[in-house]
Length: 163
Picture 1 (tube, rainbow, N blue to C red):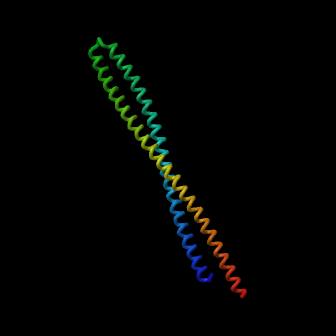
Picture 2 (cartoon, rainbow, N blue to C red):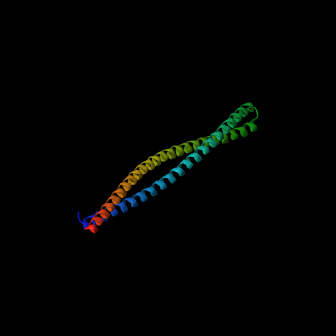
Picture 3 (cartoon, helix red, strand yellow):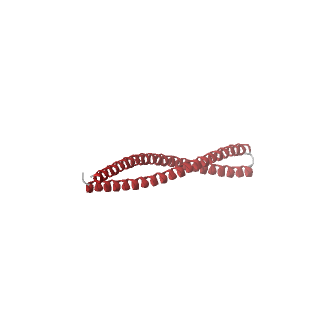
């Protein structure tokens, strides 16, 4: 094996090592980005879950008020003006209850969609981490090959120097 071919081989390995290092750093950046996105999605899920709980409490309050209003409306059937007032209140409470139900459905849908997205990003992060691990392994192999060829060159140069 000539000195030129060893130098070419070392240069080739050095180029491969630099390419592998660049790809490794690129994948590290992608992993960080996806982890940040995943954290943001998890925070959004927590926020939507809390909002959903608050809306459910509000619906329960409105339903209780609606029952009270209905009971009061039935009791005051003899009083025309009071009955009309209670009917209006009842109608408003029913509209508020419907609006709250609509908000709960929308919040649940957003929560479901966010959950799906979070699962998707978790799978993406896992895939990128696996890819990163492969690139790390390749990088270590290339570094080992580089060191072996470097050692061979030094041994070869030592032999030539002894001649």
